[in-house]
Length: 250
Image (cartoon, rainbow, N blue to C red; front, side, top):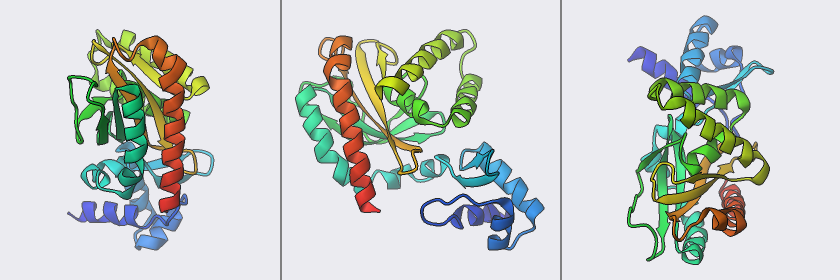
């Protein structure tokens, strides 16, 4: 319990705006020896609750903090701002639009909007999707700093079937690279064989991804051609609108 208390005390001292802190600053703030704090920050970084910057040699809160309370996330004000924007695209696309937050090697849906003609497979708030072979997960991975992305992909690899991993990894890396230029990632008949989807990351003002949004549906309606010609660019515009709305809530 003491270790848990100390770990939580470290997470709590990060200031508004998530300003990076070094071990000495953290130790002074929580009243613990620097050596103890170094062990705590190392563990919290390994778990994804802190993010370490090699250049500044300081820490800031990582995406894992979000996973501690994604049920609370699902009730945050950003859902109220995002919902009408998501509904508009869902009705236009006749498809499902989801907002998700990262949780370990998965994405967790925190908001959902569906058109009446959207997929028979109706995933809801709280559903978990693998990052590596979904459009929404690949978009999140693409938006991460390279070091964080490499570490997370290594973790996914450790959890994956070795026989399937090479093909799964190569497909994801190709799509992650494409997302860097076009702003969104896709999966064509990937996680659900009869569906296609595109995903786009939603980032904090400092550029770090904290959510992602996707558009998906039956391959007969949401074709690969339609994703690239129409829905993908619209999804990027939606993500930028949500980012703007989230900033106004701060």
